[in-house]
Image (tube, rainbow, N blue to C red; front, side):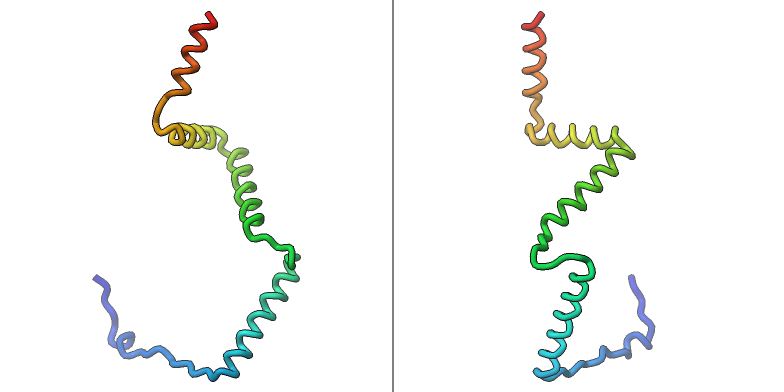
Length: 102
């Protein structure tokens, strides 16, 4: 169980009173800062967040495949097995095709 000191119990959160004009100004400043950061990073009107997420994920997979190819292969195999619903239909089909080829 967590214990708190008396000092922590006595501490209050500061109350911020912001009037509507200050709130609008603050919102505008945050938007301006965001635009400035986006400009510095080279992302603008054509920025696609999903595309960026895809690129980051793809780079991580590339790095993983270079560092640990066996683990990636077993992960892919597990995903394919799960996609099949745990059935070994493809394995059975491959065995039948191999038997017929002989």
